[in-house]
Length: 476
Ligand code: SAH
Ligand code: SF4
Ligand code: F3S
Image (cartoon, rainbow, N blue to C red; front, side, top):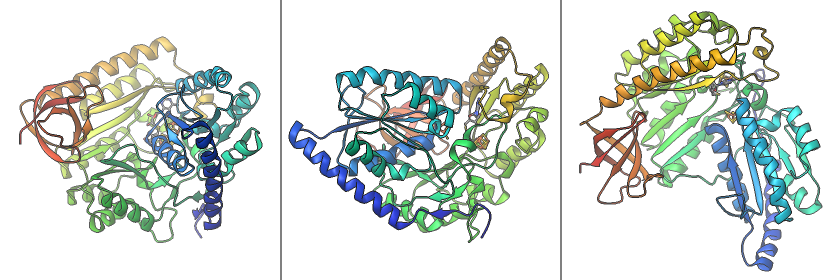
């Protein structure tokens, strides 16, 4: 057995959870006959796609337990806050909401409130909730999501507060029901956790060790999604390039992509996130080889300074990163490249920051997600003595944003008058008379169409641009 070898949650445990789910279902039937409607759940998600997908699982379990769903706090009989702690402002936002639950409980004394996700994997947060937020009934973590039926039953049946954060972090649960948000695009987790320990990052501490799902389970899920009519999947992992390191059979991520392409009719396949340190030539080749794999790569650089990259424990230099970009572009012309950048990492000098600006200028990303460094208790960088003063960080952040906005806009302008192929995902959220979708390269396109083309690939002529999105009309 390899170190940290991943194990499946035993079938008996999953069976037990189904049993508790049925018990809650019976309780909810009683509720429905008394009140004249199903109990309603509201699941609010903070954080990344991984959390979005976890919320889809939470909703899937709740649906099986007989819950209906509502879109806000006011109507809910059960509120679940699925939290993020990657930066301090994410945590502050959640505490604001937890505080607000108190007055909701006064109005609706039967209201059940739960807090889960990455924040609750930090012992000091759990202690704080226990002590200062007595209005929270249930706390659970990221590794025991599948135990929600049992934990919720203990709250509903015993009227007690239940706290259970993770007991183990080498398990993968299969067979958890999923209530998906979209009808066209779906998330598929390929691996959980992270073993990279970048010095600024809390994720490995709250998401645990890397655990890969078995290829056969992933294939079965993708096949099912095809049968349900989904056209696009995004494979999720904190670092998908580590996929398979913990598996006996030795399937790596490039091989997994090949298996999906060769064994399922899925039309579009995306994935995130790829750590630049272990992008393999095989992966770069597979993207080029299979048309179903979208011509797009999210390749977080974090900084353009080799000195800072070392301090961040990223295991690549500026030059190595640029070489990877050149290789990717050489093999996949026109590929959309996006990135994450942190500004104000401890010890960042003017020179380091200039290195970041020049790298951004050189790579010309389609889009960059830029973050102000946030000190995370328990990470090595939180103890570094040379934290950068706030005013300097803000000024640098503004300059980076301005540069990237200009580049994004220039790239978007290149699309004016061109016709692009778009997979329509449905009506645009901001303007219901328009449709929205994305190109193979992940550009968002909002467009008009004489008929409903949801779920279809259509040609759209680009007539105007926003910084990050394109606008046009169907040409067919
Ligand atoms: N696993 C992914 C990203 C996870 S977190 C990856 O490695 O790419 C998403 C992004 O949040 C990171 O890429 C990083 O840019 C940012 N981030 C993580 N910790 C941070 C911190 N302490 N302060 C500011 N940004 C942070
Ligand atoms: Fe965090 Fe680094 Fe892991 Fe990404 S690779 S989740 S930034 S520790
Ligand atoms: Fe994602 Fe935030 Fe957790 S970014 S992994 S939800 S800490």
